[in-house]
Amino acid sequence: MAATGSLLRSLRCRACCNDVSPDSLRGVCPTCGQTLFAGYALDQMDGRQWWGEVRGRAPTLWRYRELLPVRGDRAVVTLGETEGPLLRLDGAEPSDVEVWAKDDGGLPTGSFKARGMAVAVSRAVELGARRLFAPSAGNAGVALAAYGARARVPVVVYLPESADERTVAAVERYGAAVARFGATIREAGEEARRREGGRGFDLSTLREPYRVEGKKTMAFEIAERFGPEQLPEVIVYPTGGGTGLVGLHKGFEELRALGLVSRSPRLIAVQSEGCAPVVRALQQGAPRVTPWENTTTVAPGLAVPAPFSSERVLEAVRATGGTGIAVSDAEILAAQATLARVHGLSVAVEAAAPWAALPALRRAGAIRAGDRVVLYHTGRGPP
Image (cartoon, rainbow, N blue to C red):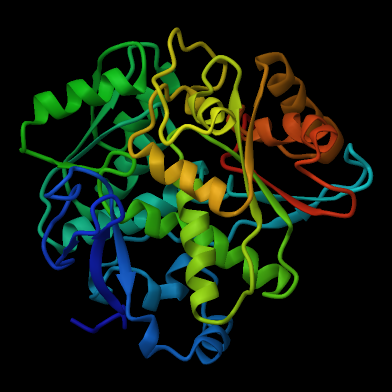
C-alpha cells in the first residue's frame, strides 16, 4: 500500500499528559478517560514548502494528508470532500464589520460532519475496526452511516426518541441500523455505550482522536482562501458537542507552529437559549460545563446538554480570546429566513445561529468595528 506521507507521531491526553501509540485502535485516554489528540512531526516539515504544495493539489480535505492520521492511501474512505465556499454577505447588520459565510452544506451528506467522519472512519478501519457506532442528533449519524457504507463496515446510529423521521430514513438509506433511546443525545450515548459493550468502536464526539482531525481542515481552508496574513478576526460557530471549535483551534495552532500564521481568529460559540451549557460555563469562568436541565430548542444539533471533554471546548474559545452567546429560537428561525430571502443561502437551523448572534455580539464589543467575521454554516437547509 502506498503511503499518504502522514507525519502522525503520537496521541496525547491534555488532561493527564499521557502519550500513547497511535498505531492501535484507541478511544479515550487509557489513564484518565479524557480525549486523546493526534500529534505530528511538525519539526520534520518545511511549512512554506508544504503550503505551496498543498495549494497545487486537488481541492479536497485530503490535500492536507501529511497532517491527517491515515497512513495508507488505500485506507482513505472518501465521498469527495470538496472545499466549502466562502461568500461575502453584503448588507449585513451590523454594517461596520465585514461579514463572510463559510458554507459546508455542499459537503457529502450535507454538513460539516462529513469532514470528521471521513477521517475518523478511514483511520478506524485502517486500524482494524469492524463495527462502528455513535449517538447523534442527526447530521453526524447520517455522515457515519454514509462513510460506513463506503467502507463496507456495519454501523449503528443511536438517536434520541425525538429524532426527525427524515434523519431516521436517511441513516437507514445507507444501510445502517437505527436505535432510539432517551430525550437527548446524552441519554442516547449512555445507552449506546451500555448496549455496545465493546462490540463496536465508539465514534462519539471527542471520544476518539480523529474526528477533530477532519474538523481542523476548516481552519486550513480559511487560511488558504484569505491568505495566512489576512485571517478573519472572528469566527462565529454554532456549538453543540464542540468538536468544531476544538478542531478550528487545533488547526490554527498547527499552522502557527509551522510559521504560516501569526495568530488565530477569536472563536465565538453560539448556542440556543434552551441549551447553552458551554456559554454558561464561559460566562461563569467555570473549568467545565455542568449539564443543562430541561433542554428545549428547535435546533437538534445544538441540543447537547453536557458535551464530553468540555474542558477542551472551553480551552479552544478562551485561548483565542473568544466568548460565547446564546440566542433564542425565534432569533434563529428569523435568521434562517433572512439568509434564504436576502442572501440566497438555505442553511440548517443550527447554521443560522451565528447570523442571529451578530447584532448582540457587536453591541457587547465581542465583534469590533472593521473586523472581518466568518459565520460558519455547518449544514444545508431545505431545498
